[in-house]
Length: 227
Image (tube, rainbow, N blue to C red; front, side, top):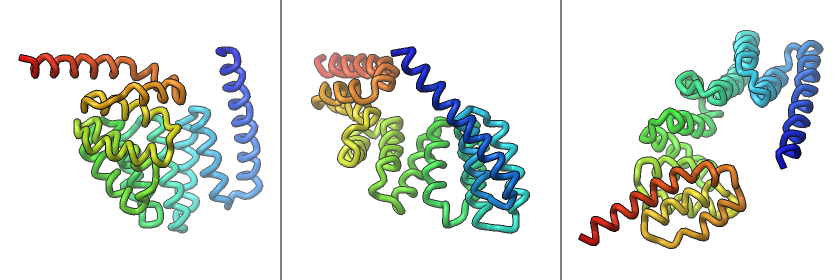
């Protein structure tokens, strides 16, 4: 299995490197092609070349400064570079400047940036704002649910996770987190964890410490109620 995964990663890396070469040639041939800069930055992020992606987009922002729509897209791309590099403060600065065309996507990325930075109250606020323009978007619903879970609002988190799973029943991460909520709420949870184990084994494995912590919390609460 490990060799298979390594081969797949190597193949992905080689494809990305070929794509970098093609996009560099495209920029050299058509320097006014703003999409090529955006696409190249995206591929560089896939290769974890964050500094190069940042430099490229900063250059592009200078080149296309007179084109407002292009600047918006490039700024969104730059925010994603910072987010991928886990520089959430800089990511927030970029997403916060977006105009109406990119505002919906920007609000979601702001929510994810604040959430990653541990500020779940702001994360929830921006996720709910993003939800107003895309109420049936599974990714946005999931960010709302994850922030509610982090804030301990279990009943509301359950409602949003149920909406996510109604749209995407094979979402292993959502199934695992819904299982955590069910456990705290004293509801049946085994099915959620079994689905999560099948659908997203890496997230399931990663979540075992959280699961153990929740189990201890539930046992403690039960002990208190028995007295």
